Image 1 (cartoon, rainbow, N blue to C red):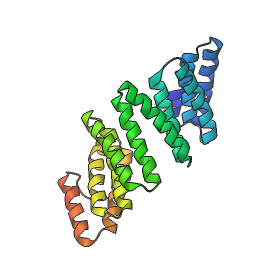
Image 2 (image 1 turned 120 degrees about the vertical axis):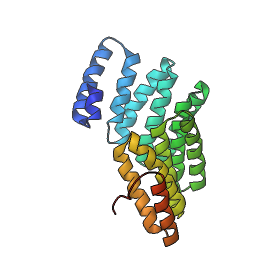
Image 3 (image 1 turned 90 degrees about the vertical axis):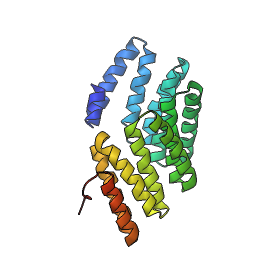
Image 4 (image 1 turned 30 degrees about the vertical axis):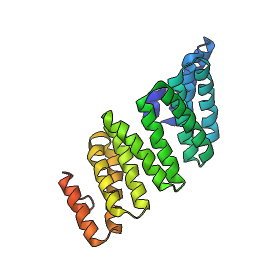
Length: 227
């Protein structure tokens, strides 16, 4: 019920359900499953310090029971929260810890996620070459695994990096790739990607703009949005 409420973005209800679950688990000394609930409580906090407290409780239990996959997931998620709140050193530390576990387990899905997050971190720091390298590593795994939604997200980020570099043609090409997949996997984010494509077109010179519009049409995406 807590997860359902969270998916509906009803934070108050989600917290209430998670705390009810946690109380029962702790009553019966079920720490192993409590780790998951601690993790979920972390994901619905708006302040990093509160989220970090829950994540670290979850992480400690996962490490105690040797649940490496959950530990890697929690480290990565804690890193995302830290990055979003500007705690970049903490984010890097969390990502490295998660990456070490993923490498040890040979977990390609977790590796792709961590590579993407390192790309995001490098992008925030203005290290565009490093960001592109990390994103490309993530993308290679996602394409190998036929992870369309994951690949779309990484295409989109590569477009953002190209845009910030002033490479509007490259940015537009990446956004077209993202758009083609997001239309199938995440229609809401497809709208975001389309807006980014249009912005790249507006910033580009006239010949590049015409080329990008042709690429959009050739990809079978129909009329440009906003026309």
